[in-house]
Image (cartoon, rainbow, N blue to C red; front, side, top):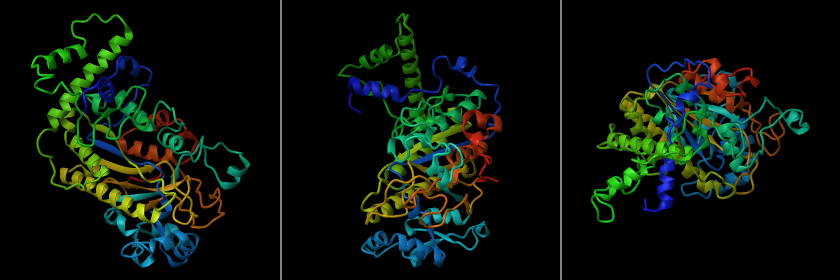
Length: 468
């Protein structure tokens, strides 16, 4: 990191922590919560920026539905035929899912592309599941209600920035708090972590998903803890004394701080420096697992998450929520070239992360899941797809009630009751329900979940059954 005023301020902001000024007073805004924080549990959100095509991720496999799907997507599938090695979307190259709840789908079958093989293996053996057609909703909605506007819909549909924010917070761009942060608030209010600093951690910059009312987010880089350049060096500008002077200045040592903004800034800087130093010291040495991670963005980020999880005891945490992100999923064109590569990156990184948690003995205690701006249309524009709404997502972990597809799975057709046009799916499972299910596994009770997820009461079944 270059040494400049701009980067210094950016780095200082990156270390804003949950133990913010007035933390104890902020807790008073919450009721007396008693989330179950025994043992250790972590939730890891893997956000795929751009809108991943769920139709190209979980594919119909029974002959009738595959043929119907292939007819609608013929122009795109023809492009796959030109890939080196031939098409990986031919039915005989797909990986059929052996679902424990196959009877729920009346003879319909499903498969994953071969690039997702590492996740297919986990799902088949019961350490993963798929949530079908999940997305933001205000209330349950069908096509008639959507077209007649007789029921509310999420704001600013099909806009990248807004739908990223709506997925993470139920509000468009500019939202203050995300549902990951609100779940973490309940943990903080229950005093679940002896040190709130590392309750929510991002490897992908500042994200509204992790921002709570009383819990902030700690940021690390894809290579591990960051450093304010000059503090960790033996000398600065050729002076051995300057690093200590510089740190004392950042900490406002010996200064009478009469202004509230000065005191808040000083408090943030002190907590930032201390927390970063704690994590860097704990991060030293070899990783506590032998699992090799792929050399891609998600692999690097998830390896950092695994290393932080390994430090859970020394960091004083029993509950953590992580956010990692990857881009490139806005496939208006060249989807046949880009999605197989991206799928391979997702699968190898998430599989390595699961294997590392299993090696550390916490695979039952860590659940990762994918999320994205939105899904994409079933119809295609020759070599790509347009912005959609509902999509299919993975949930991976030893605690998952796996080998299942959870939720309704609309048929691969145009014009059914959950199609807004061109196979753009209206979600049949709300993000609020998905969040509540993860939050329940995390240890929150129904009162806490309703407080953290204000829209949850609009849905009759808050728990979609991902965990036993």
